Image 1 (cartoon, rainbow, N blue to C red):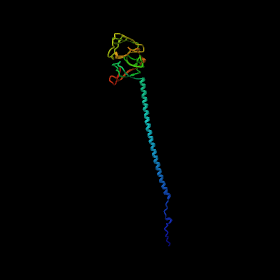
Image 2 (cartoon, rainbow, N blue to C red):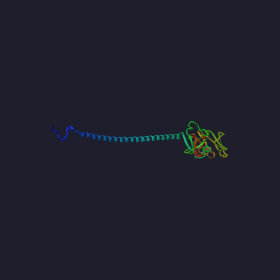
Image 3 (cartoon, one colour):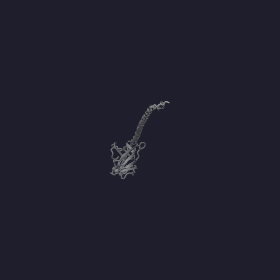
Image 4 (cartoon, one colour):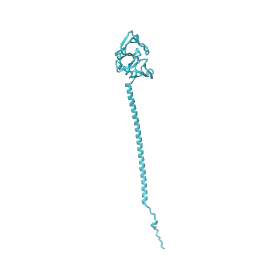
Length: 237
């Protein structure tokens, strides 16, 4: 019987180690790390893009709202301009020639279209271009109509011989002992202030009468009281 004392193991007893497999595993681990790195970078990139999109949306919204606001302001300005030039006039009274109906400092709204389709009536309070200087606007009351005879005598006003009832005045015209007669031309009007003894009106103008085409508006409303110094709405008549 032969005994084999050689300590070298048989090939069948050897466990072979596949170093290539371990190397592959190491490489696979590196690949996993690379995939993580790429994935992390992609997430950061996507997050940055989302932030940029959100910022762009906010800026776009703000610009859109600002543009809408500007359009509203421009539209309102155009409407106001059209109203001021063609429908309504806003006037401030500098003198007391129309006391006690209108006081100095009063602010008024006049209707520009009042006489486009009708004629001024006696007693209307109107805004018109001052005949002796059309760069100025005056506020007075219509007294004499076209083709009427206006007379002032003994402090009273007469129209075609009949005394005019004037509940809006506080005192009659100072009587200078004379009779003043005015014949109103066609298409024109004779004007007096309600504060008769302190009013520069048709009695004193070089161009005595107001032509219809020089009438700007009929006064409708006082919205600010110069006497009270505050907002105060009242109808003018």
